[in-house]
Length: 240
Image (cartoon, rainbow, N blue to C red; front, side, top):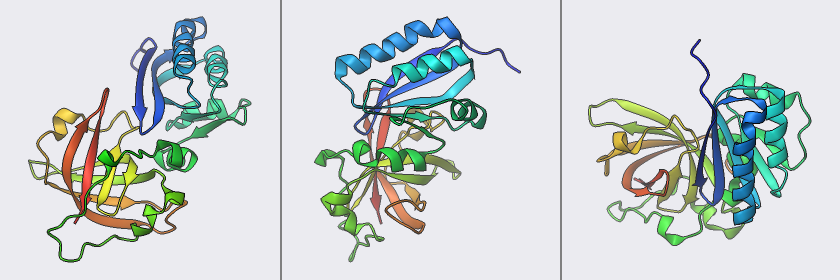
């Protein structure tokens, strides 16, 4: 077993929601500077909703757990993303306030925060592929209703330059008739340096069953462009 790393904190956004990425060994009083930083960001930006990503946590003790919960009480709603079962079990065995939700995957994150993750700016909308004589909407057309403008989970399979396929879990933070804009909560998602130059390449989208779509939807698509955001990137994907 490799030695646990010291605590690490990253700050970014997913859609319209602030994300705090915690990693390493979360131990007692060593957490004070980290939780203070999180609290400062929450107060300064007057955040009403936040996501705490514990994907890269090596270990966590009871004191650190209590400190994490305490700093997540200030927002109206907080979400803890804990895909690791051991880490998730620690939170499940303690009392979580009603304002804090524990999630194990992107599907649960999108279900809990869907309308808040959604990016309303038209710059993130993907135009319809005009080269198609009768573009399909794959059952997504009705999503143009303002009542259901929510982010949805998306499983993506990219076709790489060497002919291989690369799978990734994403959250579509904008969905339109022409396509979707995908971002990653997953810290193991491919780096932009690995994806660079894949514009116009094929990508398969699979929308797993969720609150909006009761059945799985598979959609052929292509990458239109990459958007370099402050601390990550997003992908504009067009249906074909």
